[in-house]
Length: 216
Image (tube, rainbow, N blue to C red; front, side, top):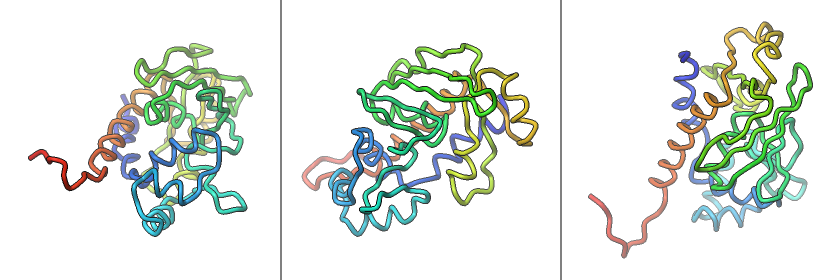
């Protein structure tokens, strides 16, 4: 296992506003734009708190009515089609497709196109069982070092792809020094570590009612 693969979960867990991100993902998964008011209710925060949190979540996509249409999970087409409960959605990167089923607590079907060969890679993911199918079996996922990052989408997501095989990725890797490819199973393991961190943070961030007993 490379240093990059070992470091990614910890680095990625520092990005984003977990208390807003996970409720937002769950709203977007229904296939409709999300208003600030809807996110406020789902996250249990005031509208001002939501607006402040969104301002810190760079690359958030909005429609012309100011509604949120994308933040990792998006209603706008990308190379990574992500289908949950019959809703055809998209993600910013290949790793997102492996992370989001657990965060959404829903199984997903993924179709992604290799940026090198144009071959379609298909993956099925269950929130409990993990990856349950990969076609072709030789598929891999590219990862890049995000030591220096201003925009997670441009610096990381736009470089994280599915390839049909290691050979399929060879030309891309030669153009991206420091990048690597890992098996879909390894990419899922990395994503699962991140998922666990995010869900733990959400649990810690969830308000506790005043009349509820607290653990020591």
